[in-house]
Length: 216
Image 1 (cartoon, one colour):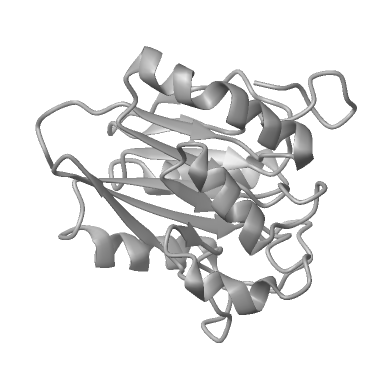
Image 2 (cartoon, rainbow, N blue to C red):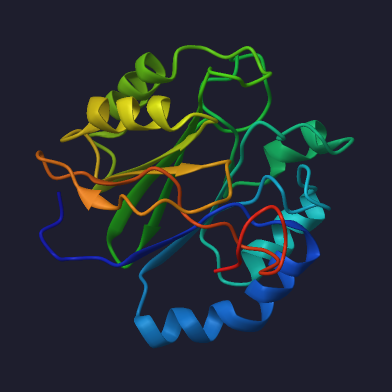
């Protein structure tokens, strides 16, 4: 691990045009003000609240995002399955079957610092048939360990219990485990006993006055 501290900003589900507009107007100045080294965001709801397109992915990356993750709505937008391979800074959920297009993980490098990023989907109450998130995460961490200075893992899942269990499982193996998908933030952010930063759900990026969750 690189001994120098780094500041990483993780943004929860970017929802529709309001979320994209917010990032376009605010992210650059906010990043400079707080001196973030890297910015990672979940973009799976960026196209009208369901899925993402290649054009929108490039729009978000142009706002100052260094890596985009996705979730269970990954294939909701027509033709995105044909676009994702050309998006080098976008990764699909890692525990989708290997026959799916797209990258299961990313390594984002800046100023000599290498951050590994990947997402796993939960299994409880989720529609997609996916491989075990625990086993998948262990495998990918093993693949990334010698290639990165830190690893950030997102768990995109419905139930708090599955996210918490995953956090305990990954404690000491990665720098951070952050939950997405359910849009309402939880107040359980903490450092687990072996040093992994954890939060069950980080706030979404979208309309403040809505039934789906508050804006950052």
